Length: 246
Image (cartoon, rainbow, N blue to C red):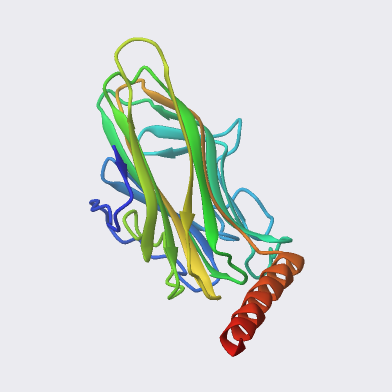
C-alpha cells in the first residue's frame, strides 16, 4: 500500500539514553521489546569514519534479543564532518538480519541525522532487499525530512518532520521474496535540516532479511542551473513589461 499523505508511524519503543546531540547520526531499534541504540563515533560504532555508523560487521554480528545483524552501515553525507560534494543524503543498509529465536520478532528501526547544509527542491527515495523463510510477513520503508532540524532516531519511533513517502511490501508463501522502490518527492527545505529513515518488519523463526538498502537523497542544484533559471525568470519579466508598455 503506497501512501503520499503526511503521517507518522506509531511504534512501541523505549527511550534509551544516548548522547542525543545535534549534528549526530543515530540509529535506534526495538527488537521484540529490546531496545538498542548507537550514535556515530560511540563505542558501539564499528566504523571509525565520521558520518558513517556501523552496527556489527560482515563476519561478527551485533546480536539483539536473539536477532543477528551483520554488516549494517548508515551514512550521512552533506553534514558537518562529512560534507560530500553536491548531494545531501542519508543511507542505511545491512547485509543480513537473521532471527535465531524460536518466536517471531517485530523490529522497528529509525535512523536520523541533523544539520544538513544544502538542500534542493527534489528528493529521491529508494529501497530494496530480500526476505527469506518469512512467508506472509511484511516490511514498511518510510522517509522523512524536517525543516526544523530535529534529531531523528533517538527512539525506534522518533521520526520528525514531513513524511515524504512510505511503502509496505508483503512476502508471499513459498520462495524468497524481493522488494524494491524508486520514487521522488518535492521538498522545500532551508538549512540546517534533518533527515530520518524508518523501517519496520517482522521476522519469523529462522526468517532473514538480506541485502537491505534504503536511501534518501536530495541533490543540491548546480550554480549554473540556478543562474539559468534566474536568467529565464528575468527574461520573462522583461517581456511582460514590454508588452504592458505597448
